Length: 210
Image (cartoon, rainbow, N blue to C red; front, top):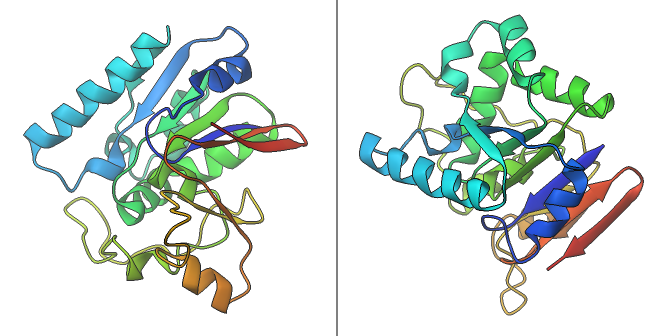
């Protein structure tokens, strides 16, 4: 399993992502965490993230999971054509809905288990991989925001690919902000990642870089 889980954009060590890719470049840019934005704002986010990936020498292409809602087999086939899935930040709860409604959550579990691609992203993207999204709603994300065609009910479970949660945007000067109080109260292990840092997982090795 290969993961590059950044707090903000590509962080200070994008070279670590390139090492995981081993020369491969085909990138699915998944922007559904930004679906709460206006079309103009969403396009600005798409442009910025596309430029970040192009600057690394990658070949990004947006995969809008809304087009695959209710079509899990098509979702699986499309995602399997890429070397990298890059899930940007935004609404944790919209992104989780998108993964559920498209069947991408099951496809991602399978593809990572077979080491068929790299999973990367920042902010909301890394939050998908832990055991729960509980605690995040008390900080910034509103789980009730669900524009059509999203289901109104939030999904609270993570993909359980990692046995711990990721806490992006961690600030050592304010260690008990965000979802950290919830994790501590409920004995949920978590890895804090500051802006500029990324948790890099390559097989059995995991380290925070940056």
